[in-house]
Amino acid sequence: MRPRILLALPLLLVAGCASNPNPAYYNPTIAADYQEFYDKGVTEKPAANAALERARKADPDNAYTTFLQASATAAEGDFDKTLTLLETGLKQKKTVIYVATLPPDDPMTTLNRIRQLGFSTDRAKDLGDRQPAFFSAVRQTGERVAKAEPTTSLGVMNGVGVIRKSYQTESAYWNLKKDAAKKKVIDAKLAEFSKWSDTLSEKLAATLRNLMKDAAKEAGLTEEELASYAKGEPLKDKDKQAKADAAREKMYADEIASLVENLKSMPEIR
Image (cartoon, rainbow, N blue to C red; front, side, top):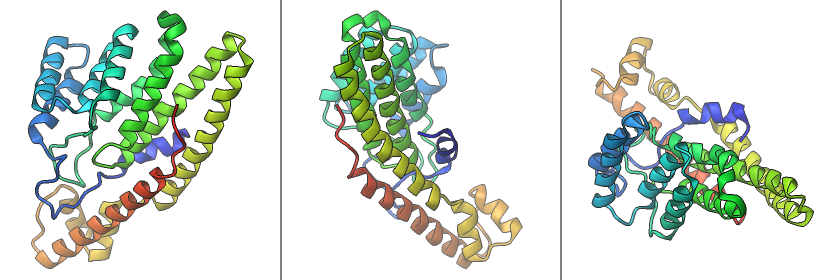
């Protein structure tokens, strides 16, 4: 994705409806394990691995846990294991990014780990002739993340960025191999995907809103009330609180509905 768009997108919000107290992706325990994995990273590997293992035991069918583990092995440079993990994850039944806080408040920081998978394709030279298989697995992972539950702008754009980077890396790979035919195929796929993703970025940029401020404005909040509202503090004026909450929910629901619709036209990933 174009950098100016990516920098803005993390400010967008998670899909869902705050009136639903128990969406399937709401699991504070697994979300906390994901967050611990993200926080510990490679500096405290035993603790990070233990957190991810707890998440795996809690939901063995969830591919997102496997993708997170793959992001860690890629960061360590173990691309044999990374490829195996990605292939395992792609066979799993679902991709759910569990959250600890109901929408629209969960930042989902673990998605940043997935984004790094795209950049890791530049460093997978040890895989030799298996590099194209790795590129393909990374792209399919990006697609699964982009279409994961819950649908989020951050999740979609991280997944899309992974796909695009992998196509770019594979194009360079075939150029180095002097295989013009295979490079032409990948370049065509890259061009098709880039056109779609650029259009998606433009649509999101056109509808990008500061939901907190816009909802506050619609509800007639003062600057002081907005400061409290932004912190999640309940307002004294319950009518304003209700109006701001309703406006905020509708605005992010509209954004996510647009995202879901646009995902339907994503080019086939190979």
